[in-house]
Structure formats: structure tokens, C-alpha cells
Image (cartoon, rainbow, N blue to C red; front, side, top):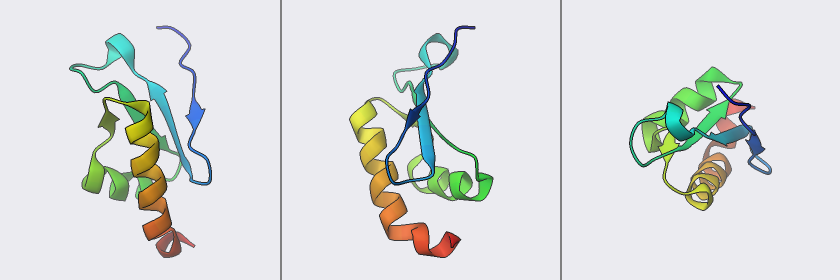
Length: 72
């Protein structure tokens, strides 16, 4: 594989990367988080794959604003 560039989603615990050929289908932006509980809860609501970088950033940011208090 190639080195994946990790993008940090500002003011959230999320990161994301372009999955490219590793990922089936059109949705290639993969959201990740070191805290598996946060990632699990986010993925249940929004999923882990997005077509557009901006959309992924928006979802992560909005979700964290609404839910961050539960993970203090």
C-alpha cells in the first residue's frame, strides 16, 4: 500500500484519510478516531465512509459539538 495522509478534523478527536483503491464504491473518505467508543457511536449514526472531504468534516464537527459532553 501507499502512505495514507491523515487529515485531522479541527476541534474534534476525529481524523480521516482518502481510502482510494482500498475502499470499494464511491465513498472514499474514511473517518477514524483513536477512541473506539467515540468512533463506534459516530459510525452508528453517520457511517464511516463519505464521498466528499467537506461532508466528512462537517458531520464530524457537528456530531462532536452535539455529543462531546458525553465523553468527558
